[in-house]
Image (cartoon, rainbow, N blue to C red):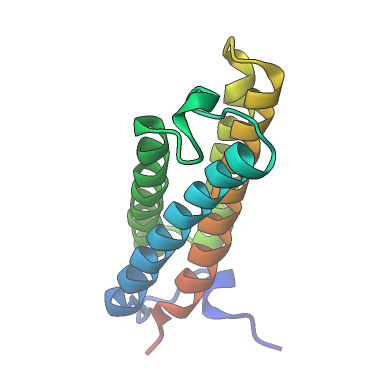
Length: 151
């Protein structure tokens, strides 16, 4: 049984299809932005946790919500660039990418607990960060697997 191209050292005749990778990365950025927005709205509106802004700011919150939405999209695009680099240069690039995304997500999950915000807001921010990381990691690993062409 042969292993997929991505799970062994890439043969020298394989190449990365950027026309598959980058549209997938852009779609991942849109999904990550929507996950961030949905997370903020859910915690602010459904669970009444004033994440990123005082409760008086309404369901959307304000400028910090916009920052996290664009930050999630930007993170997905940076991750796409990292994946492209790994696909071009490393053996087993999806393994390395999975580790990098997992550890970065863990940092984003733990970081809110280093702030002085109330515990409910720390938990809400960490949860939103976790779902953003899961979306980016799972989608880009799938896209990365499809973007390598052999032969």
